[in-house]
Length: 200
Image 1 (cartoon, one colour):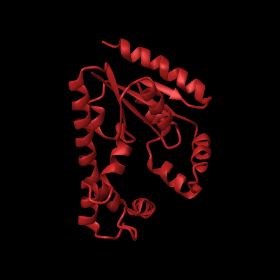
Image 2 (cartoon, helix red, strand yellow):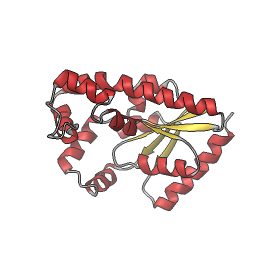
Image 3 (cartoon, helix red, strand yellow):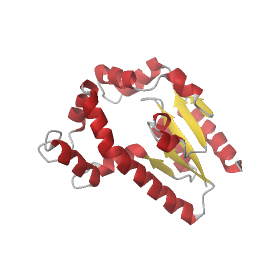
Image 4 (cartoon, rainbow, N blue to C red):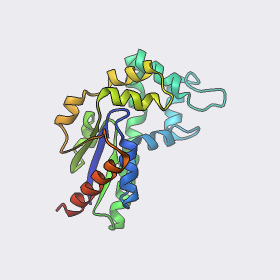
């Protein structure tokens, strides 16, 4: 079973591409979804965070205060590193567990790993068969994320901390510049789906 590594910057369309693959019957293992699940109260990620910082990043209901944690990460590289130490091994182990389960089913020719930090992390990059990068001009990224209700300041902070578009593009085996319609994007994904199914 082949593994396609899907990545891209904020607002480039990773979620839309994931949905298109899933609509074609392709399993998508999403690191962001796993991270959210692991950070729910009582889960392993939540436990790791509270063991390190107590209730500092929890709200009144003892749930993870994601905006507060995001702000702290942007202003303190140490907190960012410590959070990655808490969560990344747990996320990686869950990605591998889900992959192993799907491989044992022997019904899929390939699956997709949606990993925001795919290209920054050798633990993922070394295990995928192809890298699919979704990209868009910065102005388009900002416009899309503003429409989600995220502040411009936060978007700019995220973009500042992400890998540059040029580097990301240079590391792609497959590249989608997502500036067209949703229909066009879906057609590109269908084309790639056919190519991936034909891979030996």
